[in-house]
Image (tube, rainbow, N blue to C red; front, top):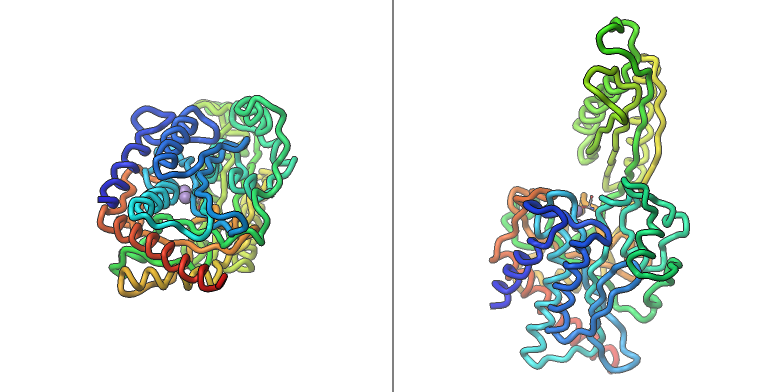
Length: 411
Ligand code: HGY
Ligand code: MN
Ligand code: MN
């Protein structure tokens, strides 16, 4: 029953979008407000007290006796453009269904629980990712408020327009000593579980990640009158770099390097591109390897530019160290995976998650759910009802065993 309910809720939430015909929800957009209203209603039905903080994070709290600790569960409700309906949403909706199930069974937990729907993780509207969890953990900086979106709206202006009041980056929502940890359920967004024929697994660490943009500058000119030998074509230089980055990373697995966007400001078909901006996303499970790759790739971009009479600048927009998950909390989660699935598997996450930021506040653990062909950031992203039911059973089992441990510890 609950597994099907989870499927229907994710289908319904997957239809809440800013762009008719495809799923896109970006920071504090009308679609995000509707998503918060829908998910907030489900939280209330499950017996949670619901609030939204000034940064648009949706917070559902299941209270317990005063003085007990709080377990945090959650993920993000924003999406990439033309997204799938599981990335982020699964980690918010599944805990709600699990808590509703325990409530129906008359089970009360000996600790409080907060289910978190973070307002921004994907860095689609603003380049600095994890704005929601950064605010929740007190790590949003005044400098972040100067970030601006494609229309030139600053983060501060967007937040204050949304909340209707002056915004100061909040303090951490909790003290470390008040928390039991943060557990995020997420689709794997990769092929490992499918290859190993497992519905779920646990995460050992989240890969190191650096993102930024390379700005190639040459000289604009007339496409019809400028001989090829006299050109300083910024787009051609950027294109050479894109292929070099792909070749470089392909020879150094598990390194991955992606140019996801390319932009020619004021470009036109009959103008030689004078400027081209490409994004660059470099990831590796090991920090030093990620840094080394980035240095070498930027060095190669400079060599291409020199040879072509271009200049190239690098603007980092995001950098996160590799983030290990808490061995103790992950072992507790793996215990439930084994109880439900018979065996567990531990894997590295190549994708970034709010857990990267939450790990500064409290121990983190992640439950991965198999997704078809490892496909994600795509409308065909899919996790089967059967696998979702397994993940739900793992979460319920985890909450019950954690309750027993917690009660034993408190004597
Ligand atoms: O890009 C990522 O790794 C995540 O999906 N935001
Ligand atoms: Mn994502
Ligand atoms: Mn995600």
